[in-house]
Length: 109
Length: 109
DNA sequence: ATGACCGATCAGCCGTTACTGACACATTTG
DNA sequence: CAAATGTGTCAGTAACGGCTGATCGGTCAT
Image 1: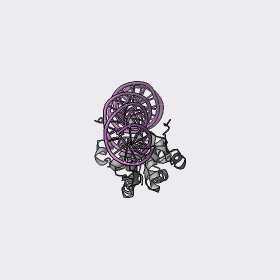
Image 2: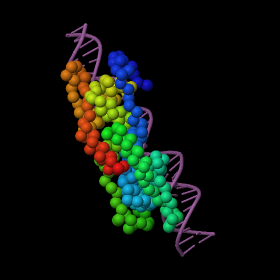
Image 3: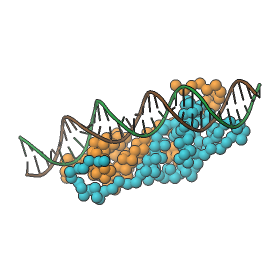
Image 4: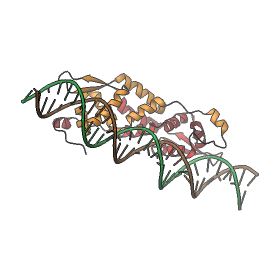
């Protein structure tokens, strides 16, 4: 609950805060070095969790948590590995990444 | 310190984490609704702190703190108001915003 | 079947960050 | 001058988010 400023009542009527929820949500996803690095690494094809974990020097469960957030946002897809059923490969959803980029462009562009 | 995985030693040599620090830093700035809204509002010319504070329903000192972060990042400039010396007007630095956008594009693009 | 490996989920801890309240300073107004 | 207004700064607090440890299910090898 914001406080009532003594003056500038008319300004509150004229100016209204823009809707930036989409861009802010995607920015919060990118604002983590592990998640951002994952998205960059997945540009050259799918990678399994153990590869990403090794590349960033992060624990497997930690990387898995980050991948879950990217998956819930739709930025990455899971593609089971046909060769070794234990490994789970992740790949970028380029269309979703494009819309996310446009949402960010709506703030900075 | 990450744990030593028993396998995949060779993968650690081949894959290396990309450098995403710039994009992550700017994403952290945009990942706040007040800061993102400020950047959008400043697209149509400069605004003083009291206007921004009223538009978002946030306290003045809170908005001032957010503006300090945007200012430290170089995304906004201060332009003292000639009419009323008490008010401090902020305006977007379009060039800095463009470079920040390109840093984000380096992750999602 | 037993053990090793890969991955997912969850409670708990902990560090970062936004918010609050109070104060100080400058400027305008009466 | 004194009072009011606009802004900035800072310590303290609360909330959010990432990391950890533990555990479980699923798959492959022997």
